[in-house]
Length: 329
Ligand code: NAP
Ligand code: F7E
Image (cartoon, rainbow, N blue to C red; front, side, top):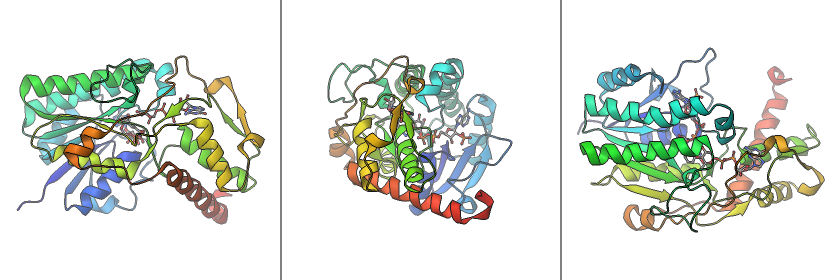
């Protein structure tokens, strides 16, 4: 049988790098779409770079998507690219709308024109639930986004449903709750904490400056979550699925556990600064992934405690390697 081809937008990001790994392991030919930058940004994919085909494109450029689809003829497209940082969406709301919202339409319309049999995955988000109207949140919970990012993701979700219903595309929306890893960007709170803890433990910093410590999130482990994306595209029918652990923890609890893992008390180091507070906050998220469990056979494998410990240990190891490397001195 011919090798299946998968195209991943956002392959240089956290999820894109893990998804590329699992698709390669499943025997796929992987085409990673990347945007041009003046310096190469392949940190997360350098270990698999020679196994995937990297193709330039931009979510803002419709023809670059059409060209990639025509040239590489994928069977599956995973749209993971986005302006994904909620805080930035308040200061760059228009760019966030262009990429995170309209970028989805550009890909869907390119698929409709080039090859409507391509299966499509949209990276939707628990941020769409925002100021939650019920707990826990399911596929049926109404949306109430609280940031330009959340609003853009609601658009991306509904345009995916619309292309499914209008043109019969196999277009699926995965509503993923927060998922983290040692590859998480340094600006997101979990990695900011674990990297900060490692710096403090190694004597490189004395404080960690954070915003709202009471926000609660349903945090899972990214490698567990990318498996769910693939499972969704293997179903006969496209649909919407919530992917979550079903547990919720506060930023304060995350910090407490991360510091405790290296024998420190977070209260001695964490400082709060309004600079990291948001104009409108999402106070509480907790998902119910019963549908994914029943239909996809998916379940999270990593506990909250394992996630925190793994991330702290990885940051300690990373900083120790950097300290030993003269290029980082
Ligand atoms: P990430 O690490 O921030 O990666 C985002 C990716 O999008 C990067 O590869 C980035 O490229 C690319 N990108 C940004 N703007 C682009 C543009 N204009 N054209 C082409 N590519 C562009 O995000 P992630 O955590 O892996 O998340 C993956 C997707 O899932 C995102 O859509 C995110 O919104 C969504 N999501 C994430 C979570 C989560 O908890 N992680 C939960 C729900 C949904 P560069 O490397 O060049 O910047
Ligand atoms: O914030 C609070 C902050 O930036 C989590 C993205 O992947 O998940 C992510 O969005 C919470 C918020 O992630 C700091 O106010 C406190 O309540 O790590 P975050 P997020 O906004 O939940 C969703 C599902 C996505 O889809 C997004 O793409 O932590 N918080 N102090 C802080 N947050 C940050 N970043 N920095 C702080 O210092």
